[in-house]
Amino acid sequence: MGSEIDYRLAFELAPIGLVISRNRTIVDCNQHLCEMFGATRDQLVNQSFLVLYPTASEYERMGARIAPILNAKGHYADNRIMKRFDGRFKDETFWCHVTGRAFNRAAPHEAGVWSFEDLSAMRPVKAELTAREREVAAFLMDGLTSKEIGRALGISHRTVEIYRARLMRKYEASTSADLVHKLMAG
Image (cartoon, rainbow, N blue to C red; front, top):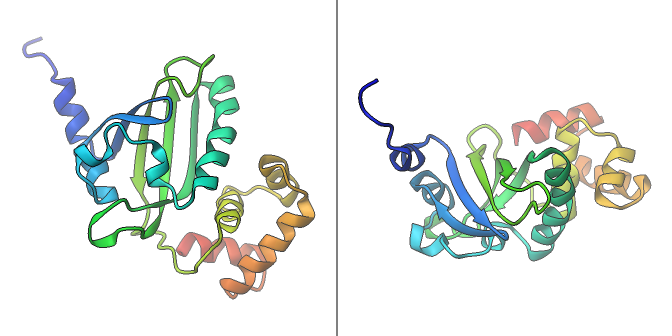
């Protein structure tokens, strides 16, 4: 077969951001992740994922939502708004596709591997959204109904409709389909 594969080099040169985590803390990350979030490896390693979220409440809600899915399936994926950590675009928000796999499904946050793909070139964040509006928008783009979003967020479907109406105003959308199209476009 010839030469051995250098897995460390593969991790470092992967075309997406990669993170090894333990208890929602960054144990290791690759250069692409650092570039995406505008940080050095030293700034991110041993930091909580909290530093990559727009708000602490979004970090907490996401952790609570992810755990049972990781427990049941062993993996999780979604599109969400994240926050640049440092550099020229510090605190800028951007759409990111996040995929993760738990090493131990029985303790889903204990250790895992996560990939991050910056979607900002295809889907810029154009409107200022609240944390809850960002969550509702992400679920709308996944095709969920108001009732399904309400169940996922632990709120009533009528409350989801209020957030949907706010999003429609902010994006000047005339229908739900128009809103989803505009969210996808940024």
